[in-house]
Length: 411
Image 1 (spheres, rainbow, N blue to C red):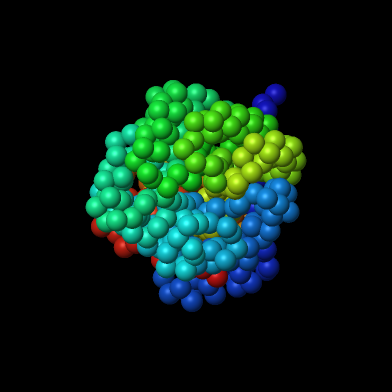
Image 2: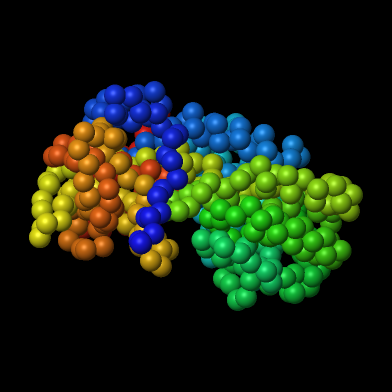
């Protein structure tokens, strides 16, 4: 007897009325008319606000919540989030401009990334944001820039620990990595920070991303705090900031279940009193991207042709991997799996079928849904890819084959 196919976790965040998805209280068909064209991304501001509230409910009250702009750098999204959270994390000078445009205090912005140019470092120093140092060389460069401008750069050390976040979609630590400074090298680096007179803030220890296992996240958090306490003994100044990363995932693929955020908060809380006792000035930061915005976004494209090839239905759309590389399976997937996909204006549909959703590009990689059960779609219907609020448009090769870029709206 064949085992049943695994199914996607329910996508209940967007209501369905008269078999049509609603985004921010607007029927998808009307929203498409308002946008004026397809394809487009739509982000629901109410869902983003609800996600922040969920984290505030379950994480310890003393946790500082930061948004990693790289997940979704749309200025309107960042502007919406800025007053709801406690800080922003950037990975380029471009993202830094978006962050500072929100009016957030520069001291609540941090800058990470292994290849910062002198120009980017100079901008960060001038803005007064915290730079997460990724190497000894970067430390020397920022010190020289500070001396040349008569300023005292604010810095933290990004640490590459000797452990990883188990079961994470992307492992950011453990073993040789381009990210951060190996933990065993950090004490000497801290001494040099003191000699250079840099304004030391603390540590950034990020182990991995896209994790759905609360036990794995909690184990990494415990190890992160222990490592920070060990390194703090060598710090040239009191540790004021400890960014323990995030790694909170969302369910994308069949068989995946939502992260138990309540369990994460319950296991993190007992770790904090000892940390605060040893480091009384420390602010503990949880840095999140996709968990804040991923489930609040949809990618919407339109069926422009319906064709059958040797008995298999292909829905050819005006969207594809050039807008949504992750949904095509070409953004880190080893074995391609389907994102949750529906016909947005026929969610249940009177008729059902198995079909593949493809884009207009001249490559077999341009695949948004492979042999997936859905409502029978016709030319003009709207295909919706859920879980598209993070690492969507900005993480895709938008110039590939010269098609127009997708629109983005915050509803």
